[in-house]
Length: 244
Image (tube, rainbow, N blue to C red; front, side, top):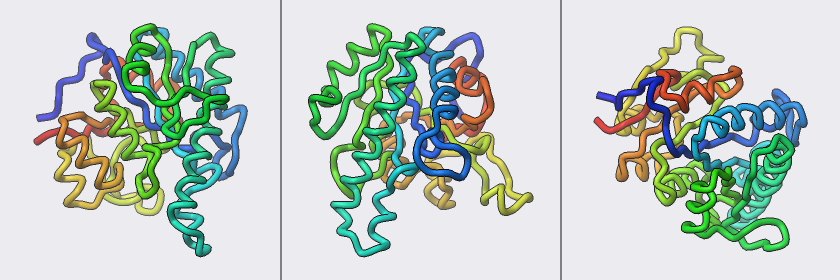
């Protein structure tokens, strides 16, 4: 059975996994001020409720490592470029959050001291305890790993209770719901269900990390206003992935 979720018991510490596309206009690349402000307001809504929030952002709206390899670019080089894209996104989100009075720290897996703090686990936890939002940039700092894997890793390191996987759909489906209207939406799945069915929740490495450490994943629609707060407050929204 999935972990019980009640609106009377919000999560105390969460790891929010954002796709880079959430910071761009629909179907576009780059950064959108409108999208940044919308996402910042969603994050502020749970911060104001006292939910300690760590964030991992992808960089697909600017550059995706696998995208570079299709033109013959070295995979490691392309992945490092993708990590830099996540730093750009993280700094942009930090700026908007702080203009909305949400104190934020960006920590990067690649050292760039003039821009952000290096990732230090104990410092990150201390920031969270002090009510600061912490954005983890540059993935794991290693090529060949996705930001999904980075999110799973950081969630474990900061002792997050759950990973909130923000997407443009309202849960996990058997097939792409935009292409097949008969696609089935799941309310809950086990980690093994996701791996066996090849469902695109997170990559296999990320799912395995969560399975080994018992961290549930909730997949929900970040584009629906108020959804992030509802999920963080324990409302049964989206699809939860959990232990059998």
